Length: 515
Image (cartoon, rainbow, N blue to C red):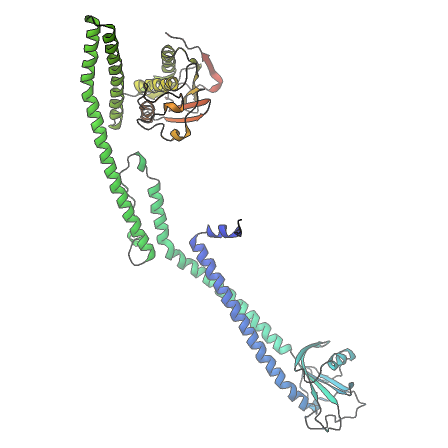
């Protein structure tokens, strides 16, 4: 049972952000938390201080109103509920209310203008709920918010159970706290803005060596190392490969890895050159003895009387020597291409070459079904004629050798968008997907993948390697796509400037017949 908790979709998106962005966001988030904590602490500390000042003033306000602990507590007759004069000791923004036996006897409010006035019945009723011993508390009245507390008369006082509720306005405290909050918010936002700008500049400069590392690695990844490139000119600059920092250590390691890869490529290139030179020398040396073997075999067959078994053996020798001669010629062709030696390029009528190659294929494999489609106008490309002929012969031979008898092979020549395209399609068993990646490699053979026959019956594994090499040196491209019942090779060459530009709408079907 899988008990893992699925991760939120936000985290992968955050991980995909650049490092500098995450550092800036983390710095701003931490600074925001610090500013919020400082602001909250400052607000609470200032609120506690100002509230304590109000609490200390409540008892003094009660004393100034004539209600002193240890005194009678009621200097006026109980029936009077008039507001005291300013001379009675009340300061602006204060109030008091006297209750005897729970009944209100007098109340007064001293506004900021200094003219005392009685409290409303609703305010007196709210003040009556304030009980002695509960401590100071904030109370909202019709004239604003006040800090209020209740005081009782001392034992033995004539007023008996008199209670005086004194209050001080909290307007000044609230205004001070609001100003403090606004100041903290403005300073915090300014600090965040300055930190964001300065942090962005600092982090970008600090991480610039990482960009240089990434640029160097990207440049190396784009080099054609698989096609014989043995020199890697890219290096991490000294500013990003200096010891003493993490980035510098990575830069030095990357430069060391590039040097190691360069040495490995040089060793590989030297080894390949030795192998190619050996193959070229061996192939060249084998031509003479093979020619001698074929010549003496033909001489014996023509001039000597041999038994039937001897004749069969000599014919077998002649057949194998011819096959080996073809192999040697293919090896020499690849060696010449590796050395850059090739045929002379000129304008070549590709239509004529396709017809000739298809006719030759029909003669060599009459049991297969061959069809040919050509445009109405000649298709001319700029290439070496002998090399194009070899490409077509190898492709058609490949379609015949690796498919069962009776296979339908379709050759289509098209000219469009500045390119001449030749496709060879058969309805054989297809190519094994595991062999598709190495199909153009030298000495790659997978006959059983398409016909079920044993490898090596007439196949050297060089045909498609030669095709790819010849197509490349003539500026073309080759692709293959295969599935059971359909395999298609597509070869494309640039059209010659004086060649025709026929399109798909001018295709005509041409019967293939031996000449």
